[in-house]
Image 1: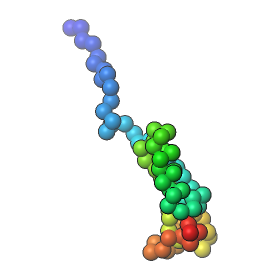
Image 2: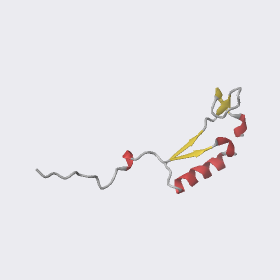
Image 3: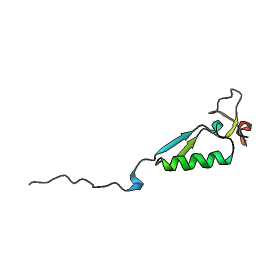
Image 4: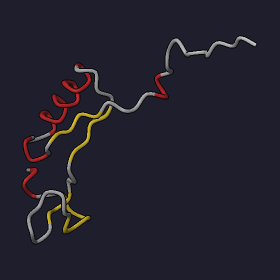
Length: 77
């Protein structure tokens, strides 16, 4: 019996991994900057934008450690 493997000619978009664009939130000042980042990421072919937490930082001041989940980081403006 001679069987040949079958290969898909294309992958549905829903099966592709996300194309993630990372942005550091403290580099942006205001909604217009965020809009520009989203447009830029889209123009580059990204379908997802990821940032560090936007919440107020904890005592060690790391952008990745939130200290208050009810407040935005004051440095965001």
